[in-house]
Image (cartoon, rainbow, N blue to C red; front, top):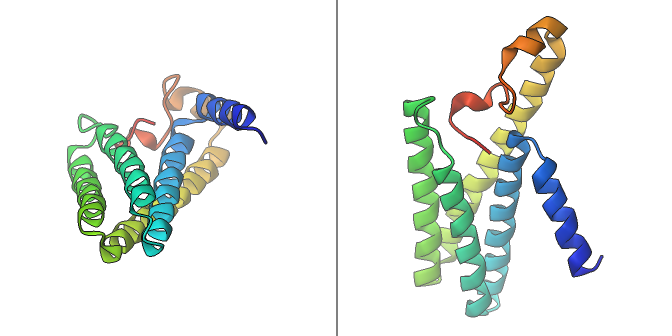
Length: 153
């Protein structure tokens, strides 16, 4: 696939994705960049490693900034702390060229991604059990049941 075609595909995927899918895409992107940074660091390609770690840091910051504490302050405070820890590990990995810090951040991102995937499955399962009348009145347009926890996209 050409670069233009793959960029268009990604743009369309993002524009048509449900909010819970967007969150999953953010985890996938962060994991991909951290993995690429780790591989580059093991080859002593520090320029590429730095670039990939910064991209992952930016994604983690976006996830933290997407939290909605007005919906669930306690959960959002916990998630904010987790995202801050991941971000700090990525910065530390970049500054100290630390594979251990990369591995710590990657382990948490992978765990969170799997947790998010399970949540999506559970939401789909619960939606399938709702009656048509309950589905129509459950959430306002543009909102997704269960995402009102604290994450918006």
